[in-house]
Image (tube, rainbow, N blue to C red; front, side, top):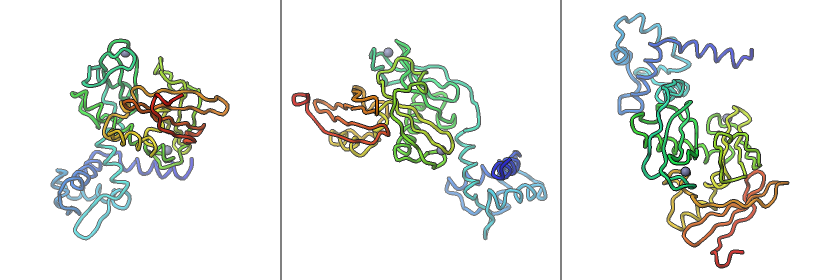
Length: 297
Ligand SMILES: [Zn+2]
Ligand SMILES: [Zn+2]
């Protein structure tokens, strides 16, 4: 076993205790709120609710150095402690179970114009069509990021995670480990098999070679936060960051110019103006022009 794995086992071992997780959660909540940080030993002990001084001190001491820092006046979280706190509140490691499909406001299927429905299954947010059953999008999001009783909150959370990850990936950086992300445009749709019927033939995969994170998407979405595309929409009063990412390009078209090497032209429409963007096999934009349909070939 590598040294990195050995040391991770030590760290996870330290965390396999309810009281220690309570200490991290209490400090995390205090840091996120307006509470005084560093927190004194007695205040921390009071909040965690342990009366036995010796027992509390034993567990707190175990955390100091790795997850907690002892400073003048008390204790605060170290960056690894903050990561653990973030994992606790996002519910990243918890399976809360599925949420049944519920019709959601303002979402429509591009194919049949019927209403959309959202559900949560296998730790993934899903958006599909009530009528034809088409799956529009699915993406893993932690269960703590939405309210299970409010399906719309799932849309907001899904939207936020997808947009964040897309922006980072498009910049070539993995949103989860900061490793290098490689973008590939191809016709390989094996990663999108769950979507069944798809409008676009080109498939873009953003791959992290370090942590194995991968995002599969269609060409219009893959380049949707490129300055060229943002600028086009912005000129037409559409802020691509102010809406669910899958609603930015409802009628975008894809033209495959070449399969060897892969070249795709994406056509975005706003009112009677179009932005034509050609991307190469690494999704780099090699040509972009704004045209009005009369003048389009
Ligand atoms: Zn439909
Ligand atoms: Zn990664």
